[in-house]
Length: 373
Image (cartoon, rainbow, N blue to C red; front, side, top):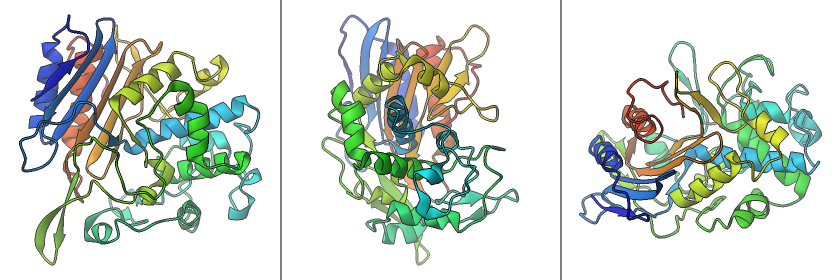
């Protein structure tokens, strides 16, 4: 286990114990950054690659999974502030070529209330899965360097029945954010990566965050990610650090660091990116799971703070991003692990979220509302 601190006055043994326990629960590498009234604490646990003893990076890059959605929502809302996108404008006005239901608005995309089928698959009420693009098992491994066009992902989703009438329910769909990306690109005439750089990354000085498109590369330094699957009846484990993330697109393709996540989310929650009225819209949750516009809102119970977050997990890599309402206390983390089709790491991931929320925001209290991702 390696731990570094940028504020030498603090030791934070509770944080060291937390990341050591998380690494022991099944993660290969853990990197954690906490910024609060005590200063900045940065630490790592585990190893940077399987079968080696080199300690995990504490300042490495990692794939952020669905934490991407917060960046997409913020970019879209900044364009709302510029008067280029209407939050309650029908999406079909910006993207007329798809034959979208005219009731679906930009707000519904950002809040997952559109009812659009998720292009990465949907869980039916009977527990079976209706598949979308391959992202699990031997088929994904074989095709992990294939490129998917965002327009094709949208068309795949629209070829399936909607989950519900627009605005009448809530269902997490990566396709909502693929469409949000396309709206951003259509109204600006630039790529999402270019707009993200203009509006967010450049002004905040974020140099470790990448919207990779179809590129399979992860900038150095980074811990490594793996995938376990069955091939002709035999179990195999492959290094999937490099893969083409276009299968998920703006639903979860970005790469970042704990430092960049801290700077970004502290600025966002502190009111330095969005006008107050739009930040309030972003932080107003729908009633089903407490999802705002690209952020979850978590009530931690009596006496505890309201937390805002958007965590994410993708193939062998995950991100945590939490903040208090004023941006004054943040917790950001990157985790790397051996993934599989059964998502067997999921219980440990949920426990890691809860363990860190307790340690950072709740003084070790053991009964917070369970975080969502």
